[in-house]
Amino acid sequence: MIAAELLNWRNSTSSALSRSDFVLSLGLSPPQNSMESYGGHYGPDECSTLTEPEFASYFTSQNVAIAVGSLIGQKISLVTLGINNGWFDPIIQEKASIHYSFNNSYKAIISASQHTMYLDSYETYCLPLLKKCGEVTGTDEACEMAHHIYVVDMNVYDMRKGFNNPLPPKTYVAYLRRPEVAKAIGASGKFPFTECSDKLFSKFTKTGDNWICNWYGGLESAHAIVYDGAEELKKKRVSTYFVDGVPNGTFKGVENLSWMRVFEAGHHAPYYQLKLALQAFKLTMQRKAVFST
Image (cartoon, rainbow, N blue to C red; front, side, top):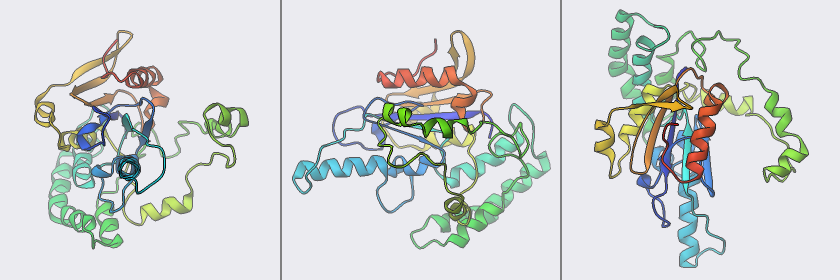
């Protein structure tokens, strides 16, 4: 969807991380973990419904094992986790997509009567299926059916464009396959860079996991995170985010958690707002909260 959002957790201590030990923004200070889209699930396990540890939680669980001597290895103390346009919680974000489809700064996708109808359908049909989907014994069929109730005829990566939108271009694929680039970024080069497999993507769609995220749902997800500054974050008003004096978005943050909305950006926000993305990246690499310039 248009109007991307960036979410960052920053580790506030050098000990094992909990949900409150992260900040949401684009970039990270080494050791680092940067995610996009479904990274809202796979980044912090605490934000997902997965039964096995993923990325951040896996790192910290391995650190504990090393500390107690049950595993031989080197600790990786994750400093920050950044998530761009994350898919965190379908119960929150499916409903937010209905609101966004009716009331956004670009164009209404649905009418007022449809907005009311979809909200009623969400409560009556979708929500029970989403709850069933999230259970340990949930089925793929329940997840897929919950999604198909809300399929909308539009380009979910950028609502301003048609289905054949060529942006962002795929030129980065050839760039990342260059041996000198792989060496510069520390990749082994043994396996060339490849895009996501269509076969793998089809597995996601069969479980209802193919809706692209918008900032309404990202903000509500940030408000749902349980940490010391949660109530203050909910009450805090957003401020305009400037890059070299130009308004490029809105943002707010409390303690080690920050949220940002990016103006005029499709799902891959850094392509559309490079200067903002770079500024947020630099600040977070320096272990600073994001601020305007």
